Length: 376
Ligand SMILES: NC(=O)c1ccc[n+]([C@@H]2O[C@H](COP(=O)([O-])OP(=O)(O)OC[C@H]3O[C@@H](n4cnc5c(N)ncnc54)[C@H](O)[C@@H]3O)[C@@H](O)[C@H]2O)c1
Image 1 (cartoon, protein in one colour):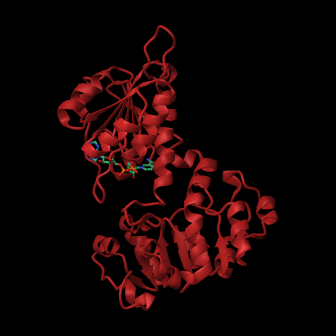
Image 2 (cartoon, protein in one colour; image 1 turned 60 degrees about the vertical axis):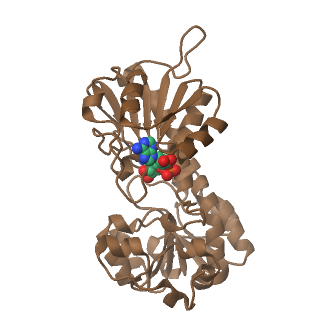
Image 3 (tube, protein in one colour; image 1 turned 135 degrees about the vertical axis):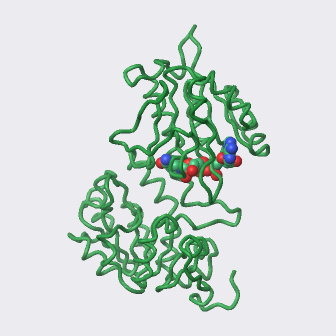
């Protein structure tokens, strides 16, 4: 198959969808890989590295879209890319169709096959192509939080791990899923006193078993949250209720009960945020202060560490990209239900219920496109 890797053109996006190691794998199976010049630069991969792995470098984005049967990307296509996408072309990337009606219509018009990273789903209902970014954001939340606790940034001026004779900081993690677990591990590793709160008792039991002794677990409810935030120096918001906006767990009135200089990192900001006072910020201007509480609400945290994020993402996407390249999208989706669930739009028809529901558009049967009578 002919695979194209365009350079990401969305503002501040430095990730790339395929590494030189990924090119080597695809070449092993006899595929041709075309990478746009400087596509890997933001993640530390030069054109030369791609060439040495067997890729051909094309100078323009137009040339990449023109030649490729499968486009592998990171972010959803933006308006400048819409006209480049061709009928029957397979586009494998994050789409998040439910948050853009314009993109949905553009891809319907393109008659392309849109396979969305975010809806590839395993039988245990986990989302293997979203997990790596949550891992990055969870770990990064502590790094960012530690920095903004410094006095220069109007934080409390407390070192997460303390030193001999001085108590460490108290880190409160709301939500014990992927983000929360990674955040807790990092904070605990730095020597902080960590508390994880979740509404799921089985999850708390699991975390209690696997976490080091400087991590406690507490049931998440308003009463407990009100109590815990008073002692917290750093609060991480990592809650998720799938398919809905994040619940507002810390309300504006609660800020006054917190210590001045407390830092709140709202990782869940991409789902609206779990603090009432959260509003999305960018890496260029990541924090603001309300009632002496420092708010960090960057919606694309992994974007700040493109090297790690690219490797984490491509480790997860490459096995699927290989299946698509080796078998073609139809056979790959017939054989693998996980990939089949990634199909959102096929040749002008929506085949994913969440997208059809979001924009009140008709839903077509994926089985008809896969030419199978019974779904896997
Ligand atoms: N800002 C970013 O750059 C970035 C990057 C990656 C992920 N995220 C976001 O981070 C959030 C968390 O992602 P995740 O992968 O960890 O999700 P997850 O599903 O693995 O975990 C969410 C956890 O929240 C818990 N929860 C639900 N309601 C709660 C409540 N009221 N109190 C306490 N816990 C509650 C759930 O039981 C679950 O354990 C999501 O909104 C995700 O989109 C943001």
